[in-house]
View: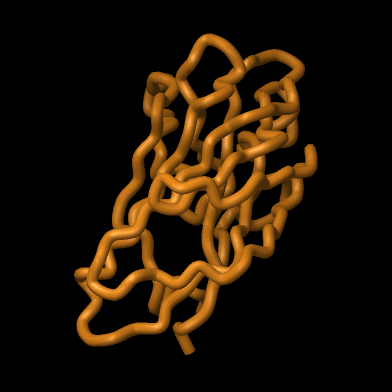
Length: 176
């Protein structure tokens, strides 16, 4: 386990919604090209490591770019009662405080569930993790569900237009 500004980088240690719930796939509308061995792909926003990030790949601030998560419930045997009621989000690129300040962060995300608008999430320009409470979204029986997060507004970075999300995780019901 690494450290970030003298604190742990591991996210959600121990038991959580992920003991029974899971994300089966990731997609992004664009991704910043790798820099040496540093990769900015969609799954970096869901790797439980606050020092990595998905970074959109457009030349501007990435308005309209998105992250999409798939939940393949056809792989779950039997009936389940899994649902999502919270998002845990580390906004920006939290590798270091300086990296976070230099890169742009999300101010507003438009959320879609199976390509239908679900709501608008307004985030703080904060280095700390943020919790977003949702109306419960139940995962379907034996089907794939997709949740998409589209950047609609940003907090500009001091040096780069690149907009980043270090972690976008889920919490919910039906696990224990």
